[in-house]
Length: 306
Ligand code: DON
Image 1 (tube, rainbow, N blue to C red):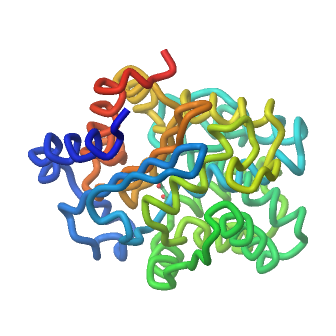
Image 2 (image 1 turned 30 degrees about the vertical axis):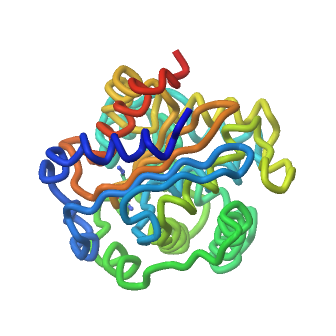
């Protein structure tokens, strides 16, 4: 298949979508982007790379970081983690508080904010210190991307100052004893990992292990066991787009994870990892043109999991 040509066709067809939707502004520093930007990268298991658009422009990975932290926590804790964060779709927005109250502080899954905060808390506990925890998360991403990934301090500070809902989620879960560390230590680590800056090519590279049964195909290093890679992929399919996860599975048909920075990663098992970037979001907080671009990709290539 001529993936370069397919990406170029998608880029052409996607143009009318690039002016639809809105850039996230509830974290003020996320507004500082070129709103109509578009990039898409494919990385095959053999290392071949195909790109279009501003594929070397770094953007805030936001919730895509939840894939990295959950992979690390699942590797460390295994089944113990499931009693603190479940693996069911929530059917609610990513920052919702309602379910947590009647489900006694146990978040539905690790990809909504509450679940990601618990996951991060488990890493802070394991590494015994918030600075060591973020360094370990950074090392994990550097190893997968074969690059030196950095935090954007402005975005981090912006969310630290305005993340009132995340503070509410963390406090509510603390009241149910599902946050073990001081709330600020866990939240600072969470806000920092959301603020890593990466481009589509780097993100596609980092996700290759999930397309290859948990082993990085470029280095042959086992990042996570094959059965855990299966679980992460299934969570990406059922929960990776919050209350639009069904919509994403329906239209795209691949495991995927979005972030409010405008990125989406998607996995074609045993073949490739894809990343698309377009910062204008739909009403559920997922990249509008990015979702359409991935839908076009699976329609043109037939490479969905179904
Ligand atoms: O906690 C937040 O609200 C952001 N740091 C991450 C949210 C996010 O990316 C949701 N994604 N679509």
